[in-house]
Every structure is written in C-alpha cells, then in structure tokens.
Length: 47
Image (cartoon, rainbow, N blue to C red):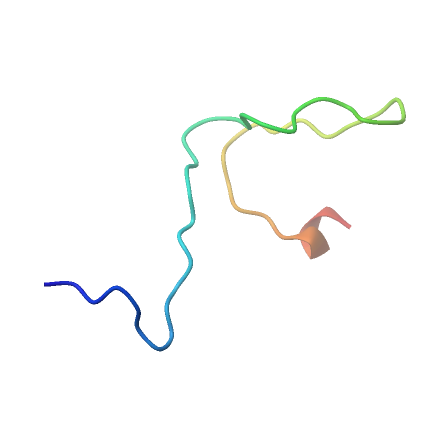
C-alpha cells in the first residue's frame, strides 16, 4: 500500500544516463556548451 498523495512530495528527477536527449541543438547564436559527463547542474552554475 502506497499513498497516492502525501503532504510534501518530492519531484521525480527523470533520466540521466548519457548526454542530453532533447534540446541539444543551437537555437540562436554561434556558440554552445557541450557536456563531457552526465550531471545535474543549475541555472546559476551555467551563468
């Protein structure tokens, strides 16, 4: 028995097996970042 809804529920983190699977093409500009290993990074780390 697992409750469907708890009071403070953590979000699922999804998959992180290899490199990015979506959003991995340059939308605008000429330069981009390329990953060397999988990791969770924040927007503040990119800045």
